[in-house]
Image 1 (cartoon, rainbow, N blue to C red):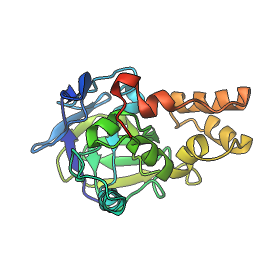
Image 2 (cartoon, one colour):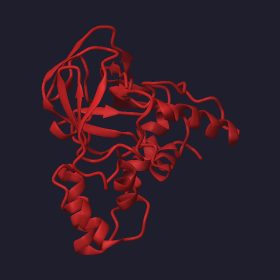
Image 3 (cartoon, rainbow, N blue to C red):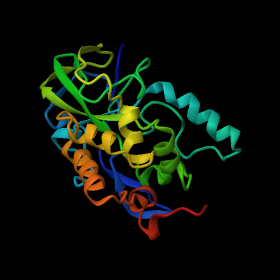
Length: 239
């Protein structure tokens, strides 16, 4: 499976309606080989270092397979044309390709991409900036519910990656824990101790996600995702 590469820098997301809201979601296709370090692709930036970037979130993969679904969803609901077209890089991904989705990819999967070796660390957690990006007040919630979130990866071995490089599966140590199942356990199902323990025991899953599982197991209360999904009041779109 051949992969497209995208990089971008931080900029105001929606200056007219949300001045001061900065994001590096604006990505452009790379036209040359890029160095892939433990921090991600050369020339790429994460504006919000608290919630993006770091060793376990160095890269974001979004399946190009999903863009037709989003277009169909928008038209079926009679929604206005999105502020950003339904096309690769729209969701701020660094990597995209056809033929691998959340129902197939698994936590801990190791892939060779060019000279780099990368590993799936967690599902992507949608946030309110997607609502601003596309102009729909609840797009982040829809994404979380339907599981078309993509996933994040860590870099195990640095190396150069060229546009169109082949993504080759090297190892799948946890075939029972797909990206979709992982997200559903935390986001979309009732509390299940066995499933939460499955997340907690998975050493390839990012520490942040394992901590969420541990908290739910210990306290019996689901995490409150409202601020992440809807954002501060000043950045919420009218329904």
